[in-house]
Image 1: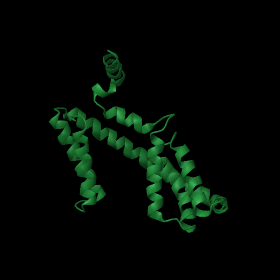
Image 2: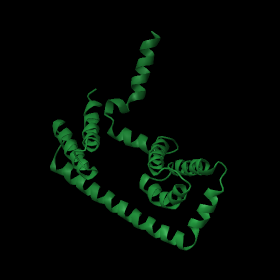
Image 3: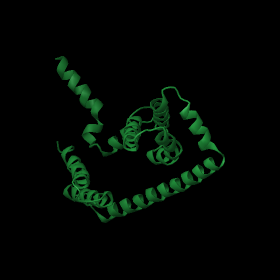
Image 4: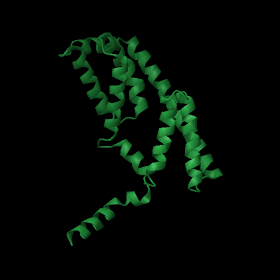
Length: 192
């Protein structure tokens, strides 16, 4: 409970401030930052070196995201100039099953890409190419966005890489990381 309740409270604070209409997503990010600092201070792990490391890490990730965004924008422009969007439109429009068949194919491709790519790369490259076609076929944009989110999160839990599993392991306390030894001791006790 000690390992689970504080992160859950942080999630509820961030999402609750958005869903409750108290904060915009940008403001909710600051709520999450302050909440994370409060949790770190409560565990006596908040120091200047930790804050410095967090700022450097945030700047690095932000720079990486903008480089990916720039590269994806250039890729999309070149792809459209070469007529690639017409090819994708013709391919998805001719799929058996109509709009649903095309959506299934796009979701399957995104699922496979989730094994090796991160969220930003997939969203910035695949969505600008496929979403206009799917929207012209009559797919609801909100439903499509929800499906993309669920699909990507499912893909990140799946081997061979399972990015989300690494994230979860990174925040798990050391007791939970040594789960095989706990499991072995449980099995030895249950056999007696």
